[in-house]
Image (cartoon, rainbow, N blue to C red; front, side, top):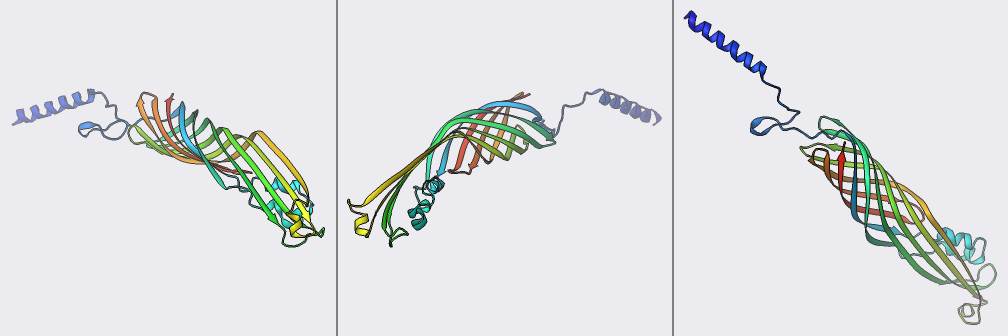
Length: 278
């Protein structure tokens, strides 16, 4: 009996020694095949990449000419009596689809499966739109000068956004080789904006005379061009990065950007990109 006990003790000692000599398994977290744990991608660090996209720009020209006409007709009889600058001189929203390309650079910090970071993204394209409208009205009563006025106002406006950059914070959750994320931040745009208005005023002692060839008339016009005008707004969106091999990853993303100003603008883009994490 004593020999059996001694043999069991010696066998246990040998097994413990062999187990102590085994190397540590390269397990970060998760499960490996056959019940062990698989390694999750390390997203922490700096990264850079290129991207291409396709999107639509929705531009609202509804209020693009009111300030221009107000300055043009300041203290005139027709502005004071008919409020020409408040007329709806626009066709509303226009939409155009366009491709674009650019790049991105950023930094990720990672805590277990949670990934937080900051990123700068840039796109170059030609997101543009234009609007032309004409409104004519006849005064229902004599204005302050004692005459009836027939007024026709025309507005022509166009905007072209050639460059767009966003600085945004990112929050993601690592799942194997995938990093789905959401983001939000500031947006900047470089735009060329051209706005032209003209107002023709015909007047006479009666309404009939005001709309007849015998009426006296005058035309005022002005054009304002802003080249390389800075637009400021915000952006938000969703995306996913997929680790391909080592630091190389593939990206798919949707971004919404909004700019306020004389032309209210919203740009939606879907993008595909290829990046490298150092």
